[in-house]
Image 1 (spheres, one colour):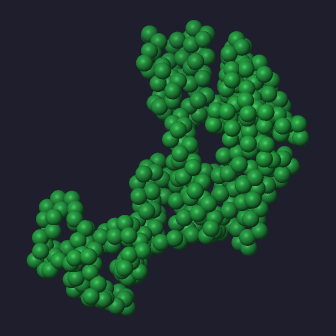
Image 2 (cartoon, rainbow, N blue to C red; image 1 turned 60 degrees about the vertical axis):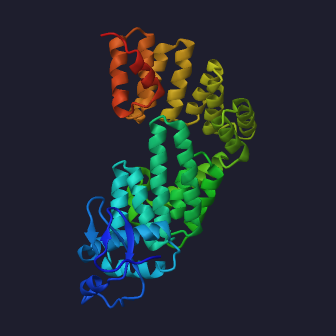
Image 3 (cartoon, helix red, strand yellow; image 1 turned 180 degrees about the horizontal axis):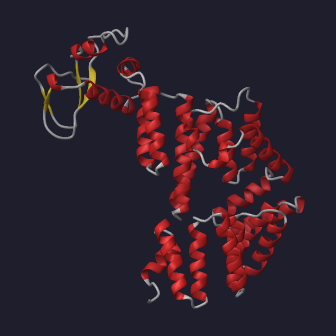
Length: 389
């Protein structure tokens, strides 16, 4: 690591290392008892334009340099010293960075949120609350990709999310187990979800939540213990932690529908009253264009209480393909009431309108879907050949 003497001109954007702590000594005087080590070179990051001399460097440039150095080399020779210096220069910086990251995530800027968290990881290393924050942001990004019908990217993002939650579970804090349980439940891994929820209920004070709690969807804002008990009871009473159920979901997701259908039937032989089991079976059958069989399964799922937007949307697809357009429209409208911003449902209403010769109505649905997500495959197909006005 080379250091630069006073008077040296620094190129724009360069990360340099210098030993001129006089500015920092003045800045820290009266603020903290931190002792500067004049022998340790300090990283400094310059703005992207212009040239600067050492005398022109500011405290903020030192902070940027320290964050960048720690992000790129968290276990470096002087990392511990840099962390202590950064917190001495800006005691509230970790909280400010975390707040900034979660603000970016809430506004859909997941790339920037993750970049900020990466900087914060360098500063705070493997702090439990940061590991959980990263998992929460990655999950939000994966859900956004899924809602945008970017399914390959979404699956990759969900894999990253799972890895992040597993890392966070190694150093749990607050409601790490609870959030992880919700994630695995959404993904259909009910066995892992049950393990996490049970662990959450066994913690001494599971209602403590780090600041990033506000990032989660409204479901997670309910009383933690009550909701965890309800979800755990649902999983165990319905047998959703059964290996056959999990296997069926994974196989169908991978495109191995026939194998998935066999596992789903195996599960339903033991749990004929599990509505989610009938939904998974119907999903596999629908993907094989077995419309009548799929419809029967979705109707059974609804009868058993598995009433959600996905079940009604899937039922509508089968009804549409069988020519039962009136019933299909009813189901899609019910699904839309449950999830008004679901692009898949809105675009399917557009497809249904086209089948009925209602071009203007179809255009209205597709334009609404386009505003929500121009990447949906059905919407993209329509934009290439929209109906004439």
